[in-house]
Amino acid sequence: MGKKQHQKDKMYLTTTEWKELYGGHKDSEFFYYIFIMKLSKYIKLKFFKRVWPSFSGFHLVIVGKYFSTVIFIAYHVSLQPCDVPYCCLDGYIFDLIHILPFVRKFGKHPVTGNPLDVKSLIKLDLKKNSEGQYVCPITKKVFTDNSHVVMVRPTGIVYSYEAVEELNFKTKHFKDLITDEPFVKADIITLQDPYKLEKFNISKFYHVKNKLKVKEDVFILQNKNSLAHGGKVEELPQDDPLYKLKSINTETRETLSQLQKDYKAPEKQELPSTSKADALNAAHYSTGMVAAGFTSTVMEPVTEQQPAVLDEDILKYRRVKSMGYVRLVTNKGLLNLELYCEKVPRACENFIVHCRNGYYKQTKFHRLIRNFMVQGGDPTGTGTGGESIWGKPFRDEFVSLYSHSGRGVLSMANRGKHTNTSQFFITFRSCKQLDKKHTIFGRVVGGLDTLEIIEAIETDNNDRPVEDIVILDTVVFVNPFEKAEEQLKAERKAALEQSGKEEKKVVMVEKKSAEKKIFRSGVGKYIDLKAVAKSNDQSDDEEQPLNSITVAKKKKVIRTELSDFSQW
Image 1: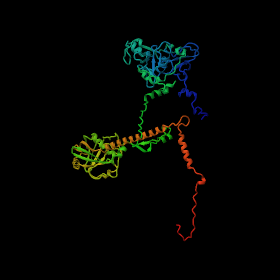
Image 2: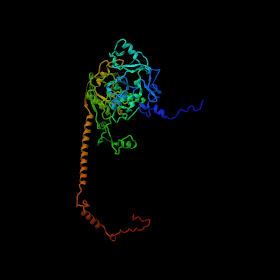
Image 3: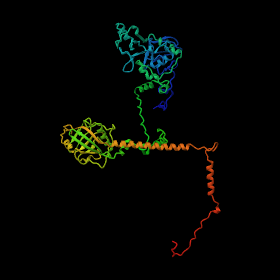
Image 4: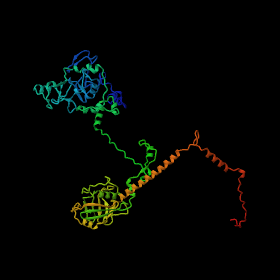
């Protein structure tokens, strides 16, 4: 192994690598800094002192010390390959992202210097083969420096002159070879003629001779696809990050273009509305926002402790002190149900609201197992439907006081832990194995004979009743949750009135303290000198000389014998 075999494996980027490969600073895109090495496949550059015919078909022209020509694939302003190629009637090719800012600023043809309008540009339709090379769509020949290339104006499709001459001119068939759109002979525009390369002489380009330069409008990158199909360009606002980009390389341009297509802005999430705590819903603990704002820079700083707000359902359930009563009217008879609203408030409220809203009307008991239970509450009748009044499953409420013991226990059906919706079942016998798995929220207090009729109905192999068991109507007799809501409103109203009275008292006290009595003008106008003098006289009378104060004599203790207890 030779020495210095790793001398080019540098652990840093060189100036050339950063400038040419990784999007570093690029010089101007015009004549004085043509990327000779980078664009060697697009630009012919040789040193000659006079005009000299080349064997490749290019006509070499003296340009100072060097000669340069551009093949048709390269754009005649940036001298780089086109992304979205357009051409004018004289056959010069322009890239959309370069011609627009140039015409906007100067209003002239970059090569000839004649007036030019963007509307006169024609979009080119260049076909490529599997290797990404430009080819003639008819002959499938790759376009090279020696190719004679033309374009049909009405369609913009680029062909080799050989195909157009053989299939259009000689046969006098003036229709596009692909789209079959008619055209006239004047619509054939020559893009490259290997025997007439004077128009590709870079030294005679108008923008080169006059040193005209424009900054690349990056916002056109975002709209070039729409402009290519006849759309309009909308300028980026100044606060857009792309607005300040002056120039970008091809790799970055493609990345930004793809990002513009695929990027989806995140949906704006509405912040939950924070309600202030009052005398009823204020918790004994705080929101914790003071600590969060102090320890985390992400959180908004909060300097005042705020009590947490209790949910309205919690306040309402605390005021429920009675049972609920509901009747189910079925096609087999009546079922009167007692609901444990105080102990199991959430399941009972869900059931009562569904009964009051008619959610269970015309629903069927879709599952029946003799000596076990009958299940219903699914509007679809399949056992997979139904939802709670909150639109989502709610938590289980297990109370050790209640058990699946005996006939007529009303319990919630679920698909697992905390998946209660609207389905329920009524037991035919004890099934304590369901304790702590299903929420018990009531029992049958009337209509046990109806349960016997329902239990006697035959079922199929899927435990579905052969006869329909339909809930025709639901009647709510007692709804303790409505009473709790009314009580909560009354308490809140009374609390507001009380707080209003206290605020008035505070305002009156502040008003009185603010209204100070003025005793005289000038300095010390709020001081009552008479009251001060009177208080001083009273304090003087209370003071006495030291010799007039009688000192209490110390009581003399008489010593006695140990056997004398008279002084005790």
